[in-house]
Image 1 (cartoon, rainbow, N blue to C red):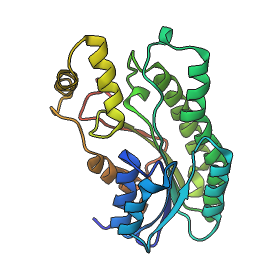
Image 2: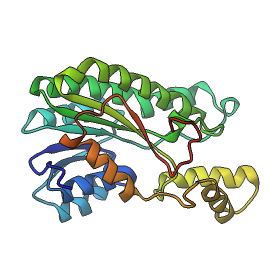
Image 3: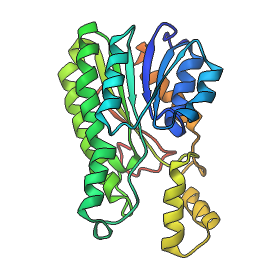
Image 4: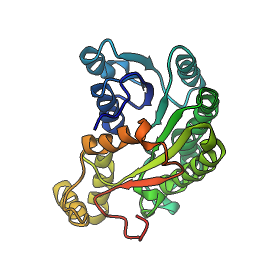
Length: 258
Protein backbone atom coordinates (compact mmCIF):
# COMPACT_ATOMS: atom_id res chain seq x y z
CA UNK A 1 0.00 0.00 0.00
CA UNK A 2 1.19 3.49 -0.87
CA UNK A 3 0.77 5.48 2.34
CA UNK A 4 0.82 8.77 0.41
CA UNK A 5 3.16 10.49 2.86
CA UNK A 6 6.17 11.11 0.63
CA UNK A 7 5.51 14.85 0.80
CA UNK A 8 4.73 14.85 4.52
CA UNK A 9 6.84 15.98 7.48
CA UNK A 10 6.46 14.50 10.96
CA UNK A 11 7.85 15.12 14.42
CA UNK A 12 8.79 11.89 16.21
CA UNK A 13 9.59 12.10 19.92
CA UNK A 14 11.82 9.53 21.57
CA UNK A 15 13.25 8.67 18.16
CA UNK A 16 16.56 7.19 19.34
CA UNK A 17 15.30 3.69 20.26
CA UNK A 18 12.35 1.34 20.51
CA UNK A 19 9.00 2.35 19.05
CA UNK A 20 10.13 5.89 18.29
CA UNK A 21 13.13 4.80 16.24
CA UNK A 22 11.17 2.11 14.41
CA UNK A 23 8.34 4.53 13.58
CA UNK A 24 10.77 7.18 12.38
CA UNK A 25 12.48 4.66 10.11
CA UNK A 26 9.18 3.44 8.68
CA UNK A 27 8.10 6.99 7.87
CA UNK A 28 11.46 7.69 6.24
CA UNK A 29 11.28 4.50 4.17
CA UNK A 30 7.90 5.69 2.94
CA UNK A 31 9.55 8.90 1.77
CA UNK A 32 8.44 11.26 4.52
CA UNK A 33 10.62 13.79 6.31
CA UNK A 34 11.15 13.41 10.04
CA UNK A 35 12.14 15.78 12.82
CA UNK A 36 13.70 13.28 15.24
CA UNK A 37 13.73 14.26 18.92
CA UNK A 38 15.73 12.54 21.67
CA UNK A 39 17.79 13.32 24.77
CA UNK A 40 20.97 11.88 23.32
CA UNK A 41 21.79 13.26 19.92
CA UNK A 42 24.58 10.73 19.42
CA UNK A 43 21.99 7.94 19.26
CA UNK A 44 20.26 9.73 16.39
CA UNK A 45 23.35 9.86 14.21
CA UNK A 46 22.77 6.46 12.59
CA UNK A 47 19.28 7.55 11.58
CA UNK A 48 20.64 10.82 10.25
CA UNK A 49 23.46 9.13 8.31
CA UNK A 50 21.01 6.74 6.63
CA UNK A 51 18.47 9.42 5.63
CA UNK A 52 20.41 12.70 5.56
CA UNK A 53 18.12 14.52 3.15
CA UNK A 54 15.01 13.61 5.13
CA UNK A 55 16.03 13.98 8.78
CA UNK A 56 16.27 16.96 11.11
CA UNK A 57 17.52 16.49 14.67
CA UNK A 58 16.47 18.06 17.96
CA UNK A 59 18.48 17.06 21.01
CA UNK A 60 16.91 17.58 24.41
CA UNK A 61 14.77 16.13 27.17
CA UNK A 62 11.05 16.28 26.56
CA UNK A 63 10.33 17.29 30.14
CA UNK A 64 12.08 20.64 29.57
CA UNK A 65 10.20 23.60 28.12
CA UNK A 66 13.23 24.55 26.02
CA UNK A 67 12.94 21.30 24.07
CA UNK A 68 9.21 21.72 23.54
CA UNK A 69 9.79 25.25 22.28
CA UNK A 70 12.33 23.93 19.76
CA UNK A 71 9.77 21.39 18.57
CA UNK A 72 7.09 24.07 18.23
CA UNK A 73 9.50 26.25 16.24
CA UNK A 74 10.31 23.33 13.92
CA UNK A 75 6.60 22.68 13.38
CA UNK A 76 6.12 26.26 12.26
CA UNK A 77 9.09 26.17 9.88
CA UNK A 78 8.08 24.32 6.75
CA UNK A 79 5.46 21.62 6.17
CA UNK A 80 4.05 19.86 9.21
CA UNK A 81 1.61 16.95 9.08
CA UNK A 82 1.77 15.10 12.39
CA UNK A 83 3.51 14.23 15.63
CA UNK A 84 4.31 11.03 17.51
CA UNK A 85 4.20 11.47 21.30
CA UNK A 86 6.57 8.87 22.68
CA UNK A 87 9.04 8.55 25.55
CA UNK A 88 10.25 6.10 28.15
CA UNK A 89 7.99 4.85 30.92
CA UNK A 90 8.14 5.34 34.69
CA UNK A 91 9.75 2.87 37.15
CA UNK A 92 7.99 -0.33 38.09
CA UNK A 93 6.23 -0.62 41.44
CA UNK A 94 2.96 -1.36 43.20
CA UNK A 95 0.97 1.48 44.82
CA UNK A 96 2.45 0.98 48.30
CA UNK A 97 5.98 0.78 46.89
CA UNK A 98 5.77 4.37 45.64
CA UNK A 99 6.05 7.75 47.33
CA UNK A 100 5.02 11.24 46.19
CA UNK A 101 8.40 11.90 44.60
CA UNK A 102 7.71 8.97 42.28
CA UNK A 103 4.31 10.42 41.37
CA UNK A 104 5.69 13.91 40.75
CA UNK A 105 8.41 12.49 38.51
CA UNK A 106 6.03 10.23 36.60
CA UNK A 107 3.64 13.15 36.00
CA UNK A 108 6.50 15.02 34.30
CA UNK A 109 7.77 12.00 32.37
CA UNK A 110 4.53 10.42 31.18
CA UNK A 111 1.84 13.08 31.06
CA UNK A 112 2.70 16.75 31.48
CA UNK A 113 4.98 17.28 28.47
CA UNK A 114 2.56 15.49 26.13
CA UNK A 115 -0.31 17.77 27.08
CA UNK A 116 1.93 20.83 26.82
CA UNK A 117 3.21 19.83 23.39
CA UNK A 118 -0.26 18.88 22.11
CA UNK A 119 -1.59 22.30 23.13
CA UNK A 120 1.27 23.89 21.21
CA UNK A 121 0.97 21.80 18.04
CA UNK A 122 -2.73 21.00 17.64
CA UNK A 123 -3.66 24.61 16.78
CA UNK A 124 -1.03 24.62 14.01
CA UNK A 125 -2.51 21.50 12.42
CA UNK A 126 -6.04 22.75 12.99
CA UNK A 127 -5.26 25.95 11.09
CA UNK A 128 -3.86 23.91 8.20
CA UNK A 129 -7.00 21.72 8.14
CA UNK A 130 -5.05 18.47 8.30
CA UNK A 131 -2.97 16.59 10.81
CA UNK A 132 -2.23 13.46 12.81
CA UNK A 133 -1.52 13.25 16.54
CA UNK A 134 -0.47 9.80 17.71
CA UNK A 135 0.23 8.93 21.34
CA UNK A 136 2.28 5.80 22.05
CA UNK A 137 1.31 4.55 25.49
CA UNK A 138 0.84 0.99 26.87
CA UNK A 139 -1.53 -1.93 27.27
CA UNK A 140 -1.93 -0.68 30.85
CA UNK A 141 -4.45 1.81 29.46
CA UNK A 142 -6.83 -1.12 28.91
CA UNK A 143 -5.58 -3.71 31.36
CA UNK A 144 -3.63 -2.34 34.35
CA UNK A 145 -0.69 -4.32 35.69
CA UNK A 146 -0.12 -4.50 39.48
CA UNK A 147 3.58 -3.73 39.20
CA UNK A 148 3.13 -0.70 36.95
CA UNK A 149 0.89 1.59 38.98
CA UNK A 150 2.53 4.80 37.73
CA UNK A 151 2.01 3.74 34.14
CA UNK A 152 -1.53 2.57 34.91
CA UNK A 153 -2.51 5.96 36.29
CA UNK A 154 -0.86 8.47 33.99
CA UNK A 155 -1.27 6.65 30.70
CA UNK A 156 -4.98 6.32 31.40
CA UNK A 157 -4.99 10.08 31.92
CA UNK A 158 -3.41 10.59 28.51
CA UNK A 159 -6.11 8.38 26.98
CA UNK A 160 -8.77 10.64 28.49
CA UNK A 161 -7.01 13.76 27.24
CA UNK A 162 -6.53 12.32 23.74
CA UNK A 163 -10.18 11.31 23.45
CA UNK A 164 -11.33 14.75 24.55
CA UNK A 165 -8.97 16.48 22.12
CA UNK A 166 -10.06 14.18 19.28
CA UNK A 167 -13.69 15.20 19.75
CA UNK A 168 -12.78 18.87 19.73
CA UNK A 169 -10.73 18.94 16.52
CA UNK A 170 -12.10 16.07 14.40
CA UNK A 171 -14.12 18.45 12.25
CA UNK A 172 -10.93 20.31 11.37
CA UNK A 173 -9.31 17.33 9.65
CA UNK A 174 -7.00 16.52 12.56
CA UNK A 175 -7.14 13.03 14.07
CA UNK A 176 -5.96 11.99 17.52
CA UNK A 177 -5.30 8.35 18.33
CA UNK A 178 -3.47 6.30 20.92
CA UNK A 179 -1.59 3.04 20.49
CA UNK A 180 -1.48 0.61 23.40
CA UNK A 181 1.45 -1.78 22.86
CA UNK A 182 1.91 -4.96 24.84
CA UNK A 183 5.24 -6.77 25.14
CA UNK A 184 7.69 -6.07 22.32
CA UNK A 185 11.37 -6.76 21.78
CA UNK A 186 12.45 -3.26 22.77
CA UNK A 187 14.69 -1.92 25.56
CA UNK A 188 11.62 -0.90 27.58
CA UNK A 189 10.49 -4.49 28.16
CA UNK A 190 13.73 -5.33 29.96
CA UNK A 191 12.76 -3.44 33.13
CA UNK A 192 9.45 -5.34 33.27
CA UNK A 193 11.16 -8.70 32.85
CA UNK A 194 13.79 -7.81 35.47
CA UNK A 195 11.06 -6.81 37.91
CA UNK A 196 9.17 -10.04 37.26
CA UNK A 197 12.38 -12.00 37.71
CA UNK A 198 13.05 -10.44 41.11
CA UNK A 199 9.45 -10.71 42.25
CA UNK A 200 9.11 -14.38 41.30
CA UNK A 201 12.65 -15.34 42.30
CA UNK A 202 13.48 -16.83 38.92
CA UNK A 203 16.08 -16.15 36.25
CA UNK A 204 15.66 -13.42 33.65
CA UNK A 205 15.31 -16.06 30.94
CA UNK A 206 12.58 -17.90 32.88
CA UNK A 207 10.69 -14.65 33.52
CA UNK A 208 10.82 -13.88 29.80
CA UNK A 209 9.54 -17.35 28.89
CA UNK A 210 6.67 -16.99 31.35
CA UNK A 211 5.74 -13.60 29.92
CA UNK A 212 5.69 -14.91 26.35
CA UNK A 213 3.61 -17.92 27.40
CA UNK A 214 0.82 -15.54 28.41
CA UNK A 215 0.68 -13.93 24.96
CA UNK A 216 -1.85 -15.70 22.70
CA UNK A 217 0.39 -15.50 19.62
CA UNK A 218 3.19 -17.10 21.68
CA UNK A 219 5.85 -14.43 21.29
CA UNK A 220 6.63 -10.79 21.81
CA UNK A 221 6.08 -8.34 19.01
CA UNK A 222 8.74 -6.38 17.14
CA UNK A 223 9.13 -2.64 16.94
CA UNK A 224 8.92 -2.91 13.16
CA UNK A 225 5.50 -4.59 13.32
CA UNK A 226 4.33 -1.83 15.62
CA UNK A 227 5.73 0.87 13.34
CA UNK A 228 3.83 -0.40 10.30
CA UNK A 229 0.53 0.26 12.06
CA UNK A 230 1.76 3.58 13.44
CA UNK A 231 2.71 4.76 9.95
CA UNK A 232 -0.75 3.89 8.64
CA UNK A 233 -2.39 5.85 11.46
CA UNK A 234 -0.19 8.81 10.51
CA UNK A 235 -1.21 8.60 6.85
CA UNK A 236 -4.17 10.05 4.93
CA UNK A 237 -5.70 6.54 4.81
CA UNK A 238 -6.67 6.85 8.49
CA UNK A 239 -8.80 9.97 8.08
CA UNK A 240 -11.94 8.25 9.49
CA UNK A 241 -10.15 6.86 12.55
CA UNK A 242 -9.96 9.21 15.52
CA UNK A 243 -10.38 9.12 19.28
CA UNK A 244 -9.33 5.47 19.37
CA UNK A 245 -7.06 3.47 21.65
CA UNK A 246 -5.68 0.69 19.48
CA UNK A 247 -3.99 -2.34 20.98
CA UNK A 248 -0.89 -3.95 19.49
CA UNK A 249 -0.33 -6.78 21.93
CA UNK A 250 -0.61 -10.21 20.33
CA UNK A 251 -4.07 -10.62 21.86
CA UNK A 252 -3.03 -10.31 25.49
CA UNK A 253 -5.73 -7.85 26.60
CA UNK A 254 -8.62 -10.07 27.64
CA UNK A 255 -11.58 -7.72 27.18
CA UNK A 256 -13.98 -7.75 24.24
CA UNK A 257 -12.68 -4.36 23.17
CA UNK A 258 -9.00 -5.26 23.56
